[in-house]
Image 1 (cartoon, each protein chain N blue to C red):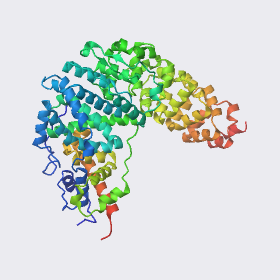
Image 2: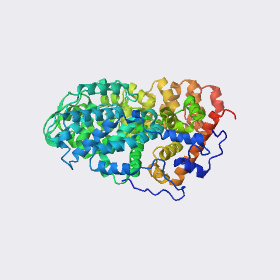
Image 3: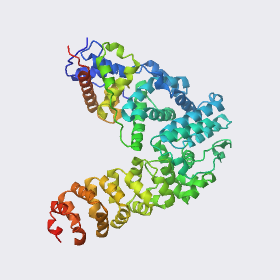
Length: 204
Length: 401
């Protein structure tokens, strides 16, 4: 079953993943394991958007289909899960990843996810960075931009930034060593920065 | 405010950005903004599956029967809703019947709540049909060409109070029902594969409700493979038994498989079974199967054949299909196939192919391989090939003969 490993890895700077699962999620998990559907709803609302955005990089437009299948399995197997809120996110996203791989096997290749030029220009050119985070359109454009990276980089960045896993947990989902996942994520960030720079440059 | 010339991101700043500590004032503010946007708040549009997920959770929790207090909450309307949602979800994924899930859920709900009539709302049936037809991976013809079965089947009493469970009239639906009988609630590809491969599937397929499946494939032991093909599962329960299925069934079912699934099914077969299947398919089905397979899988399938079977398969193809098939092969596979082909087969292939295609094919091969293949041809055949081709391969001395 999902091995729970919550220690941030030693070489990372102090600090946790951007959206650490708080006590609320832990509590919801405990209640859901007792069979409380409202608690399960809390888990769903926390984790589904993360999973959906992650799946976007793996299966493109079929993300919603694969997410539905993922939740059917989660609801079926939850009784076997042991761990905390962070562990739950990692567990769900692992299931999602397996479903996505199955899905690709049926469908042939991973769909290419080109970023529309206007999305990129929009992300690169805005003036108010803080406001960007609150715009719904920006979320889709940003996820699309990350999804257009080479697969290993896209997955690593999304697992860290969107799903909210630390390097160790992301590595467990991907079945790779934390160092390799960290490297892929860093490369992904550099590639993103480069694209933003190239597309947003307007002279000084 | 915007950093117009961001410096290369070092390991430390990368790690800060990834952990959400690169704020708007940080050096890489634009990138931090994009990452924050990607991790932005949930939108309603992302939570459309909430109802289905919670309903499925309730159903599973209920059937685990650890608490009885929720028992009375599951009444018919919820059961129906659940049924509809689960079907919608599984139909979206599998694009086939998807109703056995409903059948099993209905039966389980019945046993737990003590009263059960789970019938499929008509709206759900039409919804699933339209989704199936619109699904790009599925063939809209599948519903009509799949052997149809009687529309209503009684559920056995074993899983609860005997109540009629309506199974729609597709063989795929019956197959899902069979898998669900082996493992209740099964819906994933891996789960279906496992259920159909279980010895219990053979045994349960003998039940009267699956009689139509058995008669279609002429034997209980053929049902699991048939079901795996209908449900487009990549792994067959009994690959070597595939050739036992009636050819009429294989003719219609293999051509409906998506390329990836077809490739996996055929490459997993033992060589003798591949030969038996390919040499007995109707010409049109054979042509469609071979032209659907991606190049690498095609090479794997063809090289698994005995020389005799390979010759039988290739020489039976019309010229255009033959050209398409050989062109699709990767160079290594093409060399292997042409080398393995007995002389009589090679003669037919070479004379059937348009010269242009033959020249292009041979150009893909290393000269030594191409030369070796052509030198097996009788002089009479070789002499009809264009001199340019022969001279390129160092066989120019033959062209004058």
